[in-house]
Image (cartoon, rainbow, N blue to C red):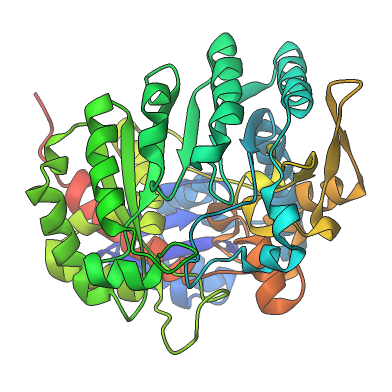
Length: 461
């Protein structure tokens, strides 16, 4: 019998009051319908009502696109699972490797999610990744290539990966990447960046992310050196240097209630410094994770977006809020090229092909669980130059949306992927639970905004 699919999403289009965007959660269909079809799908409880309210021609299209179905709820769950399995298998063919040259860091940021590492002592933090470990890591990368995997990029993370004292190990990593023509990206606080100027090249470290958390006084109260000294002026100077080197610089700002009023001041700074004139410069904002933030200070990405919308107007601000920008990029590409919907089985690389290797040769699924040996998914085998993975690897790689009870029945499951597993464990004491972070609201807002911006633009002749 006909019924409305459990995975049918209906989104009001603000500029066309009588139009709605239908989205299907596992077929990936996107279609614009009028209010009568929207109301019929929303209110028809029986097959008889559907047959009466929707014409035969419309019913045929709606069934082909997945919005109407003859499947039972259990059969739809099985279909979702099969599609998730295919998506997961495809995304697992992309390998990304993050290297931690050292856990040591010259900053003491107030919201750092790695504070627990300080409990392990100075000797633990100061260890550097050695040449043997690097040789083995890149040996495994070579094996993955031979087996047909795609190598995305190598990322440098920490601690602080670009400490002045880590230059020699970073230089080894740059040389190993150059030999393989692998792009290299670094997440750095930017303080010691001038000591890496010769490595900031198109075939070296060609892209970096640096954080500025407000105007000078505010930034220095949030991101300061271990001895309490300010960092803003040095970072600003180094950003200019990196842009002149020609590498891409993305400036991130972690936003909470304390610095949200300074977004416009930061934007003015970027203009005054001439950074926005560089094609290799970008910036974005992200609310600090409530998992690591004082509740009284935390904001949501929706609240951050409201602030950005008040500055930019319309959907222009989407590009400067990380969650919104990711959806805008993937959905916008689909709308423009009539390509496929950005369905995904899992939230991030932790569920597929991400390997984060620390200075001890321990392998973790992602950055958020670094140093927690219970979350280690394997070790680097120095003799065989490969990764020896353990049972925890299967646990992390198996966390797809269809395997999370509350996600499997959610219409947005294959767009969201279940949210961050590490954050779900902090919030719910269970990795295999949902961590939504207002995803449904954000998805609907982006779809409606893109409709007004892209789908209604005049066709290019």
